[in-house]
Length: 269
Ligand SMILES: C[S@@+](CC[C@H](N)C(=O)[O-])C[C@H]1O[C@@H](n2cnc3c(N)ncnc32)[C@H](O)[C@@H]1O
Image 1 (tube, rainbow, N blue to C red):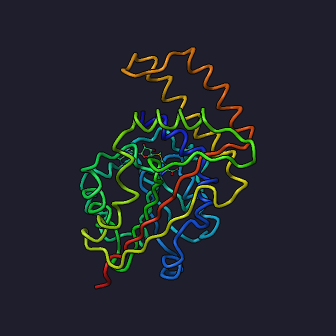
Image 2: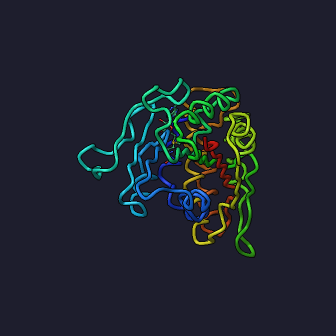
Image 3: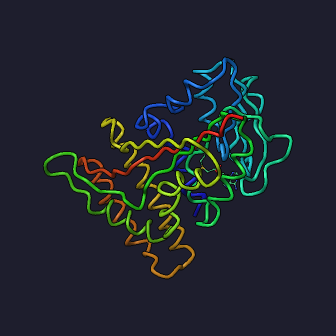
């Protein structure tokens, strides 16, 4: 299941980031030295770092992931971007302690159990220099709404599949977006800043986001069908629903959810 989510999230990062409106929170940007050292944890395709590099060509940008599965070829990476293997749930290696001006994380919810958040926030705080920031973005997918964009749009099939998906991932979606500020304060970060934007803030992104989110709903449901999981839909039901969901998106029906940003600063010594 996390793989289905991973594939979706890594495909639509441009739309998600356009709706947030920045890569780094303005308070972090204001704090950066001329040659910042920035880490992206659970970096996936390293897309975030490659976009960041356009704004900070002199920065040192290190991406880490538990798996190299989505890493771009090493010889395609710019000289100031490097990638490595690291499990955020394990204590951070001593040689990385106090090394970064910013540690960034995005869309890890599917890989996190409710009890993991506090441990991971503490591990990542160790990587920060005094005065450095942890910035973490997660969406409130449990609170997704299914709306019509035009008079006469339909959205029932997308809504039905969204609820099916939500039931599959269950309580994972109830953590992170709403608990990260507290976890950051508990880890000693201060101040903790929060921000929230809607996934449809930029109206032009609605259809693309809806189409790809819907693909995730179906990939997940087909996986459940293959495994004969309890409550799984049949392939015939899924084919019929897929046709109706395409009609929903074409008619202007769309899914909307909130994108949350939490930023915590390590106190200056
Ligand atoms: C949904 S993808 C998000 C990728 C990237 N952050 C982005 O927004 O484009 C989640 C990524 O987290 C990685 N991941 C999962 N568990 C991890 C862990 N314990 N430590 C480090 N990376 C992890 C996965 O391998 C995957 O690449």
